[in-house]
Length: 101
Image (cartoon, rainbow, N blue to C red; front, side, top):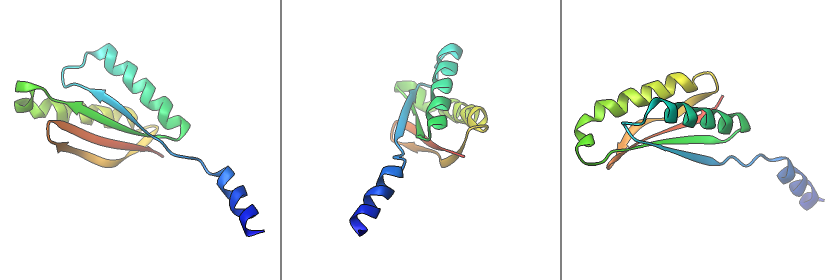
């Protein structure tokens, strides 16, 4: 009886996946809008989205570009999700996780 209940509860569970979207600090406007639309679709489905900004070479000295891009992402994703993990540096990349509202 308990096993049956557990199976029933398991069927109704929604498995949340973590989708990753990779960007560069010099990503063009069209590519950016395309990736944001995909992220909004993922969040609408109930998945979390991890934004990763990769820095190469001298781009590391211009980390302010990464911060501006993360702020822009936050603004664009505000209507569908909220920030779970604030933007932070992890080696040569910057990471932020957004979860559904």
